[in-house]
Amino acid sequence: MGSLFFFFASWWGIILQAIAVIHFIRRRPDIYWLFIILFLGWLGALVYIAVEMVPDAGMARQSFQVFPRRKRIGELEREIFDNPSAGNYEELADLYMEEGRYARARECYTKSISSRTDSPDPFYRRGLAAVYMGDFEAALPDLERTVTQDEKYDFYRAAGLLAHVYASTGQPARAEELFQRVTKISTLSETYYNYAQFLQAQKRDSEARQWARKILEKRPNMPGYLRRRERPWFRKASALLARLPA
Image 1 (spheres, rainbow, N blue to C red):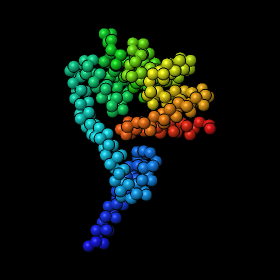
Image 2: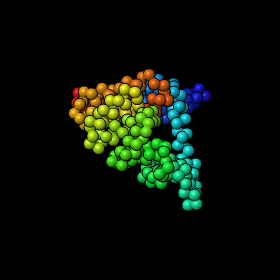
Image 3: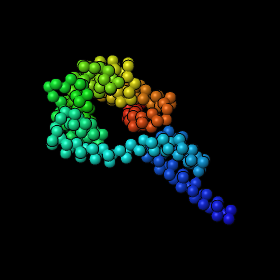
Image 4: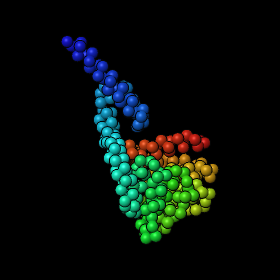
């Protein structure tokens, strides 16, 4: 009986380790977790699952929202035939943005904007969709309008994106001036990364390394949920550092 229990316990331990390793490969958290999983066996795997996988499950629940979101998109698409109001178009555009359908989002934001629109939000979001599509020329007037109206918009993200757009449309002097101004206030990893890329393009490798490192230096002091959210930027910063000459 004891040997049978040991047999099943060992197999459950292997299964736990396999689950933890697969999650580690997909999510790529701090490397020390791999040693904990491998060297502490099922106990290390259990600790990893509790600390890393369970909080990730909370983020994963957001993916289940895709079904009601798509249902709402269908409802709005039908509703717009009878009521093509600015509010309906803007809500539909926001949903398309969440779906990653940036071209459709741009179209809807354009239809939601009228001569009476004084809010910067639809202009900002249309510019954001254009940035995601790599259409920096189209993003430029919308982001300029947003930042002129409110430089602090979206916690200075709009200004950081405008600096990135300047850099991407052959305006390095304006990009440099705005990047320097925004990075004195904002700590967004996106802005730091775009600035590092700009500096790399300007052959200022030493400064580019400094800004890429600033992203990675934030990681130790971040709470777990923020570290998980910032992982894509940590990876991009690490990849940029690897490309820069030593």
